[in-house]
Image (tube, helix red, strand yellow):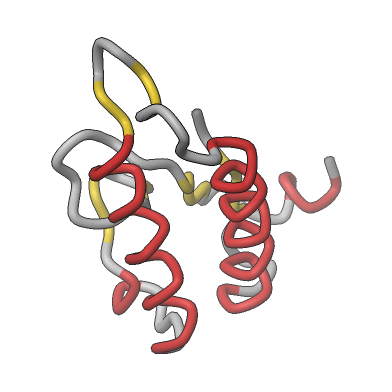
Length: 95
């Protein structure tokens, strides 16, 4: 809770249908808005692309797609984004 008190900015990491990036603060954000590295930006893009390709709004994940591994990748990405943006923004992994 101490970290949250230090900042009122919250960056959510989650994918949404048709969204170009999985970064949300006051609407859709871009990696360049936070100065994220090219490497991390590429990983975020790949993770988002996997969601766009394998998740159907009505049927769920495509058969054979490893949703558990995808979820774990999202947790790692949220951690890495937090490392790059620093303590002035709270990073949370959304649904």
